[in-house]
Length: 180
Length: 312
Image (cartoon, rainbow over all chains, first blue to last red; front, side, top):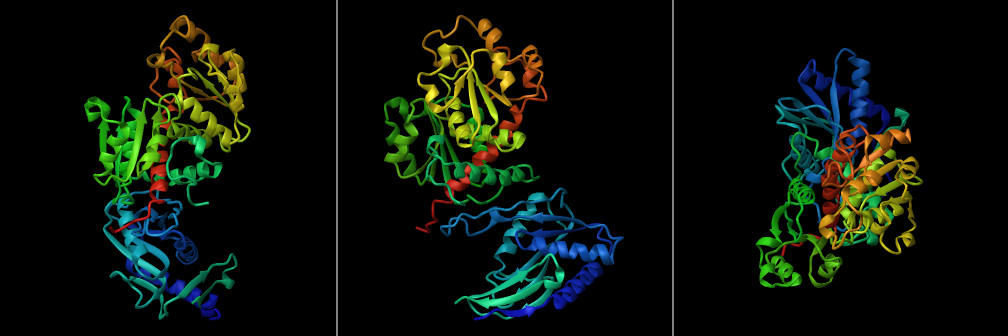
């Protein structure tokens, strides 16, 4: 199946702005809220979101970090491949904080489950919310859903949803392809 | 490469440079984890590890146990003084009995060189060498090199001095293998009676003038004089050894350059190194201890990831 474009840069930009508005509505001044991008792909999305905050809400000071949850995954030793970790950058306690986890695509939900276990290493948060750009509906293997969702899509088995971020944001694109 | 080329850690001699790089890269993640408010991950929750120590150990044993517990593994400890070994049981029998209780991995310290290799051939388990006689101590060498890399960057072309009892030191041999793989230049400094025969074949040089050696190096790894392994006297007395090879502030001031000081412990203060040097800014001895846990976590994680999960 050829690549089918789901969202072009214009739509992505609109969605991201809407998601930021929703966050501001719920978290107001972000005094007690932290944004955490999930490795590997959520790190690009959180950068985009922080950029929008800087431009549209320069007075809001946001604490943010990057979380790798490799060592909390439930598929260790389940394949020939060694699970490869990425870096974590959280230089603050999340005790009693409202945490917003940020990832690009919500699929089986297993990554989010691992991320929620992993975030506990930094304290007991007051609440955890989830923001995703794409929600692949009906593909969940555990009961997890997003609080903030850019777009919901229906996919078939074997479909791969690719979010491509470019240095020039006018070339950002999300497409779907099926390899079999 | 994202996998170790070996199924056991028997010695640095069996590793490739890419293995060391993978261990270092993985250890960086574990170093971040052991500095979190909650330092534990559940990765190895389905793995049981037995620490078999047939020789005394404080640092290595605690470091291994912490590494295992922080990875979420179940741990059992064994020391030869309170075991059936005293009743004449062979090493292979002891280990096979422990493995029959569904243990997945063995960490072995043993006075006989080659005992981890023997076990790897006669048991069905993953073996980690935690020191075998005067042969190898691979995890110590890896944590030494990791600590050096943190401070000096790439070790290629760096000058590393090993001072002390080379003859009886497993740390020295493992360090030589590891530093060579990483491209460092190595010099040894100690009384000639403590230099093993044929050591030059490992492409190391020997310098008996400690000041010349210190001036040459970027870092000095100071080893303890292992009196307990000496069957005879290798130098007249401690005082003479300290005067000629002990690191003190006079020698360090004399070389007029900053060098890193490492020591694998335990330290005999006032013999091979003075307290002043141990506690100086040049010393990375406590960094070595912290890195030891991260390095051992990385090794256990990478070896465990080669053992595929079986529900049966």
